[in-house]
Image 1 (tube, rainbow, N blue to C red):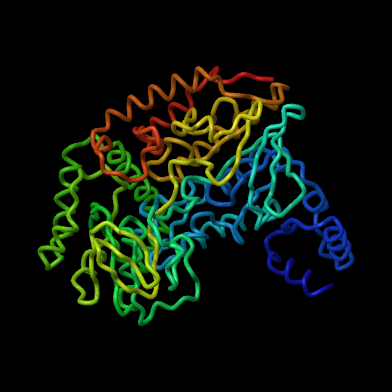
Image 2: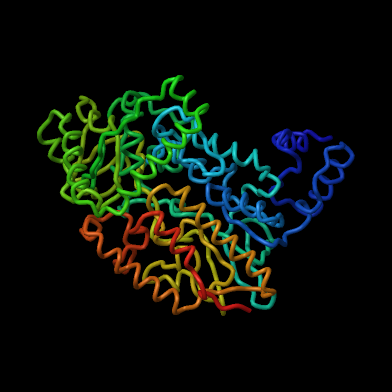
Length: 527
């Protein structure tokens, strides 16, 4: 057996057989298949030599993983997962910057059917979450269905065959499926600030979600542009390493304190061994989130601002403290939490700049007419959250582009399906951001797989959301969103689309979302 084949197969030995393949030429696939047969390892021909499937899943992150497991539970094995990255895990594979962590309490951040109880701390860090996701993939033997380094550039509905046809970057072959499940989510396409001179800067620059592995910040002068979630998590982790740190803040945000002391061995053992304690812990966290995520309890919001101001009070310099104090209501933008962020600004080698950035220069950042020379610029500027499926050209009935359909803002029925795009199901789609995303994903996957099974039983080839159903739903939803007072402020952030209405947030509890799914009926046309 050749060394290259050995490496490819060795990576998956012990995961329950057959092995995933990245796109290969027919000659390479035939050669690999013959070598595997002669070596006694045995690749399954069905996953090696075809590109037609019942279901195509885009993404092998939490959504894609959940969808794959529920398809298998439903007896649907004929599917493929197309993942653009070199590994599974989605956002937790990409976002490996120092300090990356989940802002949902750990004991709620695992699938209900594969609960993790031995979290090391109340808010899990990226490596631990990625380990969990990879564990789930291995346990449920999903790798035979995964094609890594497979970046979907285009998905087009073919009315002649009633299938979705997908174009993969660097491949002349199309992947085809009757059903398409998008697991790309919100946090996919990176956003950079709209400033000049980005290409002029002669030092090192990178985005937090595209962290430059191996780059040493030790002894460097570093600029961080942005002060939202990734900045709040990352800055305390690098402050001791750098020589000088300059944080460019466009607008101050609320950063609340949190309980984040690592669990003791005894606590972890109790969570693992005592079912009742583990269940109560998970239920208690969920109940707390349900009471919070609607942002309708004014007393809770006022207390949050008090806690936030107490957190900011650790900053000693009055001028810096004032610059870090938000001028918006708590909840208007994504809530943040950290015990370590504000103390950073008491360090002698840390500077906060609130002047608007004029431009990047060859040597650094110019803001307010003053240049700050740096060795490295880190963009902590987030994602194109309101442009769902922004990284893929999607064409539905009669060649309709989903980006044209959504030119005034993304909208989808229950955040899952949209009119004019048959057999397309979106996970973490428009207006489904709130609470624990894993619970949201489970509800959406169960609904989507249920629709697939119902369609197969009916004898029809496709289902397509009725236009009037989407219109009625979205009108009602936007009215409910308008009732969330703290979201109506002009505070920027990633909630609002180009037309000015909120396209990311779900304004109700998770229980109400599940109830809406359960009550759904007569929403589709069939053919």
